[in-house]
Image (tube, rainbow, N blue to C red; front, side, top):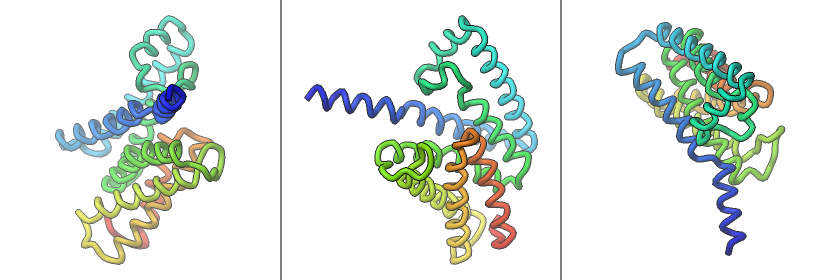
Length: 215
């Protein structure tokens, strides 16, 4: 019995639900602020870029000042991976990824790519950790990749339905966008996924939108 309890606690620690909820809550809070104040996408992009750069400065400071790092770790412990204790956390890249999307892409496409970041990243990680038996590359699994694809597909179809009458065009668009979303998450073995997901997804959705105009 104790072995099962220990295994369960270890699994919860590995899944890190608190971090994933923080990831989704932070992104949704940002979108809520953006919507509530009716900000221009360029302005929001600039604000997030400033936030991301400021966060990078804090990160470099804490990694070089042990006393400051101890304070940050104490405050942010529930939301940080063990590996981030002595390396850059994902938050600066989260802000920068959203900023780049808002500055580079058409607003609706940028918002969709950020929704991919908010939901597909933590959900694909969750399913990959729990059910990822078939590894594709590095620590990425087929099961996690499929979960990421489904999340991106559903988000695209639901979001696109607000702007375009549901039909075959939107269905095909959603499938292709889901594939780009899943592939962008796989690319995070080289660059932080908080950057790859919104930027590469945004590029992919922009290309799809030229062929199948939805947004």
